Length: 414
Image 1 (cartoon, one colour):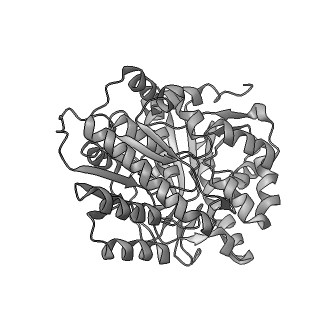
Image 2 (cartoon, helix red, strand yellow):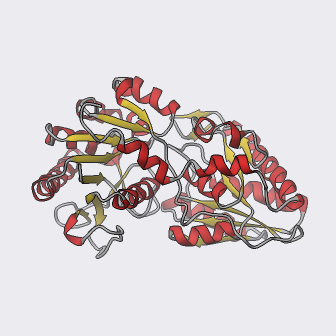
Image 3 (cartoon, helix red, strand yellow):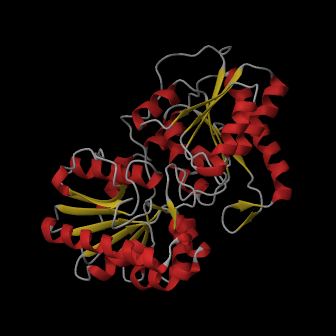
């Protein structure tokens, strides 16, 4: 088997699922697979960097034009670029969405002749891909957002299940997610394989430069700048921390946002007298460089399919403060969890998948501050952690290992 067609409904260079796609493309290219990509992009975008994918093997579905007069539809309600929410799609918009993707899918299948299709997200497009290609082996990668949409936008449930239940295989990110897929989609658990995600060893690795223990501590966040990611509460927790322990700390918020939530975060940062920077979104190579110059990574998110950026931070030698996201501990394993480099923060009570109850937010903010304070204290005493068992456990979670696990299920009859 040498020909893989990858399908992603949204932009392939801006989100976690886009990073996942690009990483799989890179590993499959090393193994000699011929590959093509279908994805949604704004019509005004002239070029999308997909590594070794030739222009003739990229099949874009363009939004913001005469045929699709609205922005790219995002799997999350808040995306790092202008987007349309699935819950806002009218029947007419949905019909145009499906018709345009159908045309491009049929064209790509006819021209590229894939042996296997890998489609991202257990949602509308994956269901459509299955119905259009009954004779091609189709594997879907669940990133978690499809499960969240299934709960939040129930009007699409029947059409989503209709196609997704006929998939040949589903790759889940962790055991918790596998149970959810089995329950919500009624897909045979034998068809749901826990694959996880990985990090790029060529981008994320420890610095060789030795930091002095009295140097300024840099805390970094990377991801969408939105409410559901907990960024607002990270800023508030950092403000508290700065008042308590002094000014020898800095916070960098890497990423982009959109709409009122993003404007609120910018307003809080602009009002702050603490050292908080918003450099914007950076490419993976630059992210690795920033990580190596930093000390602590913080992920205050209320919801993640899989917090891939946590393992990227660990691989770069950072200590981590993260919310206790479902499935994360299981994915990272005991050697990482039992080390002193990661601090888990109890989540607030959530409503509708990713909305915290207001009465829990003050306590959450305080827990976040205390978690950061603990890791700052450890970092000041020892800027590097020398733990070979920990480093070995981290190395096993690379994209090379992820793709090797995927490959076992490419052949029919497995």
